[in-house]
Length: 351
Image (tube, rainbow, N blue to C red):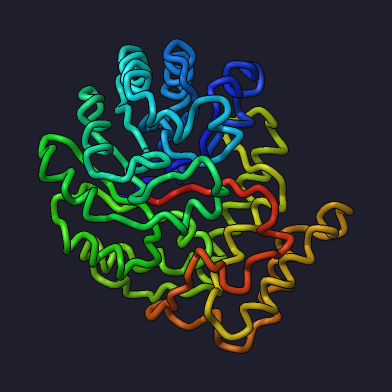
């Protein structure tokens, strides 16, 4: 029901590092079902990558046709692939020939001046082999807008995606783009019951606690008898961190890949968003970078010190009414050292 997507991994990154694949393809078993998002435009190379990803246990292959980065567009993949639907089709077919798992496409509504509905309609119809499209419901402006501005300036057109579900009833469509919280996710499903899924991106990163409401509000499961609190989430997460670090130390090339110790702290940064004391809590985490680099502190100590800065009772309150944090404004998180690093965001797809 809830599916995680990796960051985009470029085809050449995989093929040029075959002796060190754990660094790019490794994951923890609790992240399944997990979709690998590939970037590239060469059918043969993508097919090799898809085959490798299937061997690594990924549940699905997703071709990125929506990344607005100028660097990516300059190499003719990402969003620029929308200008070449026949290339996309060839890539999809090549990957489908070598794997048994689904091959899907993530894209925008169009590129630059492709404003009309007919553009995304023609793009979808031009790739009949693809059964599932995840669509960021706005255009991508490759000439003149940065990736950050491409997430906010081009207008959202959810109704285009809704129309696709009517025009292509045999295909699955998931909507992405400025989905801020679980309540909005529920509203989107209510507006169009034909949607297969809703993808939440940066909002899940900046306001992590809202994910605790998915089972109840989206899937109708009863509220747990033992209330979920931020303290319980941190406790479970730190058990996960300890397991990852232990595995990494025992077998550096193992399936589990965690990045740096600092990266392991990042998912905790948005857990207190909107709560009293959240700024001081994050500041304590942010100051951990130097301590980690100097190996003067371990992650358990760093997290405990951050927790100790919070007002009494905050961590033990049941997560119910989670505040809405606009992920595009990033609240008071923007500009922090901890989040300025390149983040490896996993999108969350509720289906």
